[in-house]
Length: 431
Image (cartoon, rainbow, N blue to C red; front, side, top):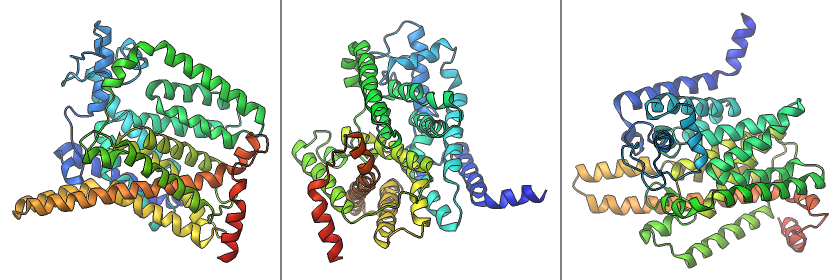
């Protein structure tokens, strides 16, 4: 009994979080209060699970769901890989939306708590601020399939460090499955820059990934014309990505020049910060480091590739275990610790934008000041995008620190940062 009680005490903050999440979701789902939490609700419930099951169901009925999808309430065409049609062969259809969506959400939230395990009130508050944010809860409300991708990446992280060789080999088919289902997880293979000790294994895997994923894209090449039309490119309050701000201002007509300038500024900022940042390689467990790389590579890939709905920010959750470890380490430099705290602050502002937007619009409507509310909303939206740019810059900074030595090893000893070493040393000497 004492062991059990001690075990519960050591996980008390995780248990509190489980209770709060259960209570929050019970209120939201029972009384449909999503708007009060800054979340845009959709119909039917778990709408993104519904559309996937609808596509699988209508594919079984002979429809070309890339053109029409009458099994979906809004006839939304399919915008993912045709591999999702396999669900139809299992007998799943739109009648199972609540069951499938509920499982996807429950697994995602359980995985989040398991991998992070807050140890004190500060860590609990940071995790709560991120997990309850409108951006994360947007994916939960819709039971979006990105939650499944998140859980698959966590599974890969654990399998990668399994003592059983066969289980370690399962990482590769799981990552390919995720990439075939949603495309963007192909960026996850970049973690092997850090993980592989033998250069030959890394380059062999790189060639295999290019060949296998290339063959997959060639097989589904006829779908791309439809996917190009069907894949959402959001612009507006719920958008996330490099083009989100300009896309909203120009109403979907991206200003390529402005986007390029912002991209260059972000990349240079990330590299510039890395010249002053030092990370202790022993500050975090290898597993948490892999989680960080998995999360950050998917975030960075999606950020620069396309505009996304805010729920794709769920991958920020994968970064937290590593960042907690760095903050806990006594060897962490003051500069690095402050940079991580800035990262969390900018991320919180970005993720909670829609809560403040709903509050501002509600206040403006009830007090007869809609113009003021609109101006404040735009100001907060710009602040949201700046917060996103800051977090991406810091992500690039930490990634450079983590992979520069492994990358040099994989590139036959070539140090691509060599031209800047003197500048970095001079800067550190002056500091």
